[in-house]
Length: 477
Image (cartoon, rainbow, N blue to C red; front, side):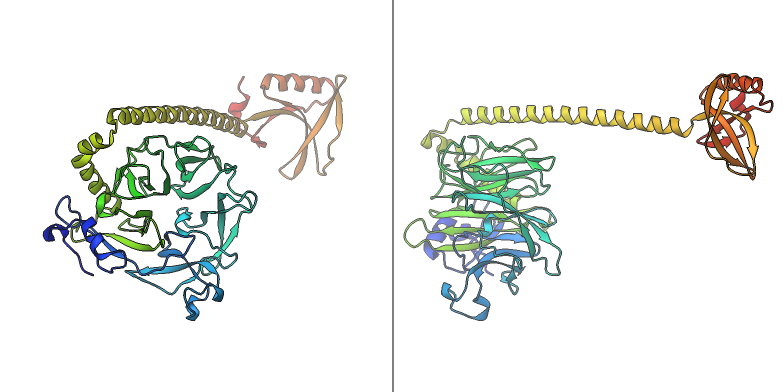
């Protein structure tokens, strides 16, 4: 693999791209802003089949669309010899391992860049056309345990928030708490906007527009979240180099900052879409460049963090790309603002307002969680107190008779009042008692009545935790 130092040769990436074209195998990644190559970009030898525009990382490899007869050495472009299916293959440097079907239970001919997995790969969300209204909706599938991790059970219905609009390209945060997707649902600023939904109590909340800090009057597509919730996406409405450019929005802990163009290190005068980063280490990723007119040729590119530039292995690819983007922004922002009449003060005010509202919501949610936790704590304390009281509960009874045989439960009349007997075994004999008192005084009062009624040997006994106790301190008055 060749690393081209463009600055040393007097080229920019855009110049190099225009000179070599999209089909070259030459690596052309460099950070011209700091005169050092920080990322390496190379074309990846994998044909992208419609309707897919990219790939997605899965386990130790990638998922992609391919012809079902390709492995039998049929003509690759002859669809009559096979169907389009999703395949999975391990990723070994720039070479794929032997592909196998991604789903062995159901056909899965859906755009690969539109797949998003939870952390253990047991759930996948994907986009497909709904048979009900011929619009794209988001669906869910769950993995079935098998040796090859290729069995899936697919939900019949889309996610509950999908209505009479298009919902596509979902991306799930690594903790599974949020999902961002592209949609033209009501509330959109442009054609397709980015929306967010949150997982609460096992359900996805009503989607909210990410606002005009992120969305434009154009289209925002292919969102992708890294492990820190930094957001990558493509837009044809934000200032850029071509049709669709790839942008990054850094997550600051409460919300997303303004979009930054990934510069001509990645973007060209063509369309750049379907960026995705490998969350396992976050040292590599993929994106696609496609022609804007004529034959819609596409070329898949792989982007890697240059280990020679970052030998400590602590930096991630998203961090390196953000460094490139923010440097470019700081250099060109004044000129770009003047040329394109971007009201930076308004954008900053809107961003701050969005953050304020977001923080208010988080605070309200935090208070609600604290309130719920406090109620649960008090309830737990009450239950524990009751258990402790029950554990230490002392019951006083009056013992009347003893018998070698059990007599079962019956009733005895004492001074005109009927009492049910309570029988227990002690030292090989059955003891018959009546009454059940918490206070010793009440048991002593019944003892007097029993003796007046002819039970001259009646005496008070104590039970602790339903076991007779000989603890004399229980009989102190």
